Amino acid sequence: MPLIKSIGTSIAGHVEKLRDINRRYATPRINMSPAVRISLLTLRIYLFILVGLLAYKFITVLTH
Amino acid sequence: MNFVTRLYYQYRRIWKAIMLYMALSGPGLVVMIADNDAGGITTYAATGAKYGYNLIWFLIILVPVAYYVQEMTVRLGAVTKRGHAEAIFDAFGSFWGWFSLIDLMILDWLTLVTEFIGMTAAMRIFGIPEWLTVLAVCVLMGVIVVNGRYWTWEKIALAFCVLNLIYVPAALMVHPSVTQIVKDGLIPNFPGGFNGEMFFFLMANIGTTIAPWMLFFQQSSVVDKGMTEKDIPWGRADTWLGAWVTIIVAVFIVLLTGTVLIGVEINDAAQASAAIWQKDRFVGAMMAIGLFDAGFLGAICISLASSWAFGEIFGWAHSLNTKIKEAPWFYANYFFTLITAGLVVLIPGAPLVLITLFVQVVAVTLLPAALVFLILLLNDKSTMGEYCNTLSQNVIGGVIVMIIIILSTCYGLSALFPNVFQ
Image 1 (spheres, each protein chain N blue to C red):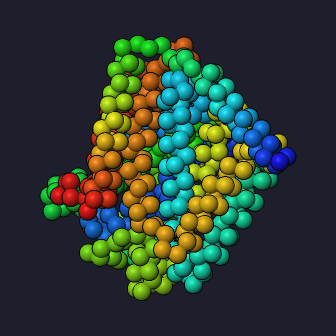
Image 2 (cartoon, rainbow over the protein chains, first blue to last red):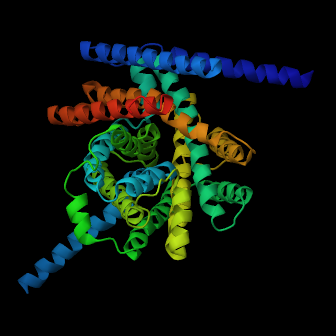
């Protein structure tokens, strides 16, 4: 039981740490100029397409 | 007398500059030479065997490409005193931060596996079993980092960088034709025309020149070394020299395989070493030693890049200037990635070829993001002040980044869909 309790405490500590990181970096500090917005949007679209291609490849490998 | 005094003054001035450079050099040289990792050696060896000296001009073009990208990390690290992971979290928020950190962790681990593949394959040529190579590498890399001083680590890494120059005498020993080098290598040309295969080789060469871990590594390294704004010119010189050294080594690998193995299909550098071994045991041994060294240097830097990035975000002590007791998580991360990657190579029937291909695919998910973040961060006047990118730096850097993104994406796609550019 003490072992399970200590594992539970350790996991809770790590989850709290992750929450703390998310809180600390919740707001982007960089000035969101049009150039920054466009760059980040393009990056999202690029990654979306890439993940789509990866998923397509994964499915075709599984089905063939 | 006046002349002698002036001469002595000049001598003292140059000597002082050299000493200062020796003290401040390191991150640029190490990261650039480590870029010639096991995967890089395979690419250059295959390029030489396939096209002879004909693509040397393209490799030389890659000097400014590597320099302009890595120089930005020097400025960013020296001004902000933050690693690349922390800079991304801070500037773009936790979504992009986690994306970069997790992607970096996966990519670094996979790349580390490929370094072990290269090192074990190189040592197999000398009859050394895989388990012994993995064990020796893990122990050696442990000894290098646990001394608790960045300076010592860096100087040991630089010694391994010097060993990377083994390809220079190896290439000279096979007597490449100087006339042929000038005629074929220095004049831009595409032997056999610009076809799908040629495009693949160009993509592979540019893909090995800039890897995502390099951005994270050099920026964290600059911070750990304690470089400040006034050290930026030295950091630039270091990076510029490193860019030249890495390409010179690449050119000599091309000269070596372009002379001895022309027309032979090369799938990996160990195969090239074994093939050269058949013709000249001494040169073959040098090629294998170079491959081991390349994998080792890559492994040193890649495992540190991950550990630094995690330390920055989780707030752990994350400096090579700390002892294990002071930074347990930093060293735990370092050894965990190192040992698990080494163990994968020892698993019978592990899908090593698939892992090697997967590295290219994962790289294209991180590299564009890391490069775009780099340019945006370098344009953030509130942080960078007078070290912000100038218009010309933005134009040059922007064009280089666009070319790298397009070509590395094509390279990644060609790994996913092998016939896409045929």
